[in-house]
Image 1 (tube, rainbow, N blue to C red):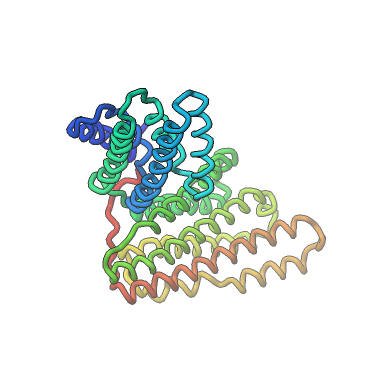
Image 2: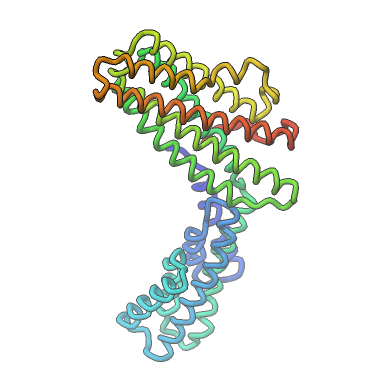
Length: 358
């Protein structure tokens, strides 16, 4: 079990909200702590949106609590009816994320039996908003998330793992069951990439230069994720049709191996070139010799013509392997174009910190 940044920030937000509530002599600081739990978010931008939504949701909860108590009292049946209406209003106004805290506000206000009800409602509402703002302050000040780093390192580690397995698969030097297990883990990594990409996309830049650079980075990261998906598709084909690959003519097997070796080498170089560890433009020998898709396809057509069983499933499965390799190579070529273009604008300088993937 790891102590992540969000867990730590949640604890700090609870402490801050309780401290501020006591400092302001709130009679029920626990409600501020509850509000802080609801309001903590993974990004600063989402935290900002949460404040806006929580203010609206809490106003709905507070107003309905006051109205129902003044008109119908605070019997538990009345509280249940008010809760239903609060949920419906939040859904109608598309404030689904605030339903929980709206209900906390509603119940915390309607529980009173004192005479100075309006004053009590105002105090409870203010206490809950202290928790919401405490969560925003913590998210803004303490360990602001750097999702670009998380995204880049998730892409690179996943890509490296896929490339290792492809290299082993073409040489038939791997454990079949172990690869099957790792493919499932790699699929989960791709899902995490998409989540990190969305969070990085939400982060706001305050200078025009940074905005332009980030827009170009987003295009590259999206292509990196797509290229990683295509490399995983190729790996899955190699794993699924391992027997078909073994029965291919030796020359054809060798051609597939050489093609994939060149392709994954090119992919590895691009990941390093993006962060400036390899200069742009690349050396003459890096790209053009490897990615000869036409030659590979011609070899498949020749093999098909010489096959004794032109309609066998073996040919169809081989065709899937070749198509997957060609698709993967096209994505690598496109990634190459994007990275070369990026460095023509930004002079090989990239601010990705060397940190762990946690």
